[in-house]
Image: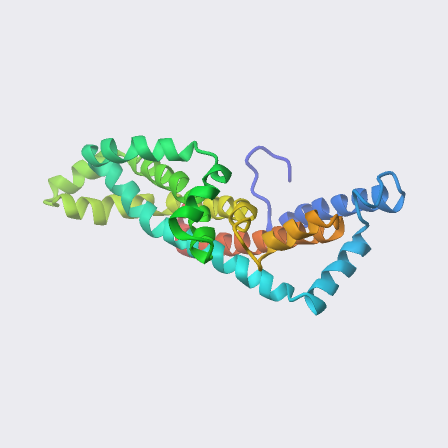
Length: 259
């Protein structure tokens, strides 16, 4: 029974339902656009988007734009993870570190990233560093608190057993706390990678000449909705591919959680 409460779908059922969702979106889109229920300027037809995407690949170096955006996102994301994971663990493990770190992190977390664009230009110029810094700001301050919360939720009994068996603080952190939170931290990384992509347009505001965000902004400036939609769909496709990669990696690394 596919709709049973907490019923796990088989692979075939999952593919059927997920494929149906895309088909339904395409059908509604086709009806609205080909039927002229919405002006083509506001909603180009699927065939127009396909033709535009092919043209962008063949004549406008879309591959270079995709690579530039992927590079910026991945550098910012990996830097965020490399700093946020150990800091989040330390904030959970030691009260003074949490007291020192959490207030400024909370403060920056609520700042609107677009408002920081002028400051990043002043701090690091208009090169790649400013774009990566904006993506980093949008990702790091969310991720570090997620990691800390995961660490705070580890059961105290695990630590008590470890200390009883003769472990010291370093052993408890590296051999109890970190392994216990890694499945949840992996899920946090999957979520925050999506967040990092959402800041791409903001990051590529800063004197960008390449990138999908730059492509979308240029298309908006010159009233080319078909290029805007093509860029948005490309980001969506990249997101689906990366998310699927995370799912596969999660099953390989933490398959025991589903057993």
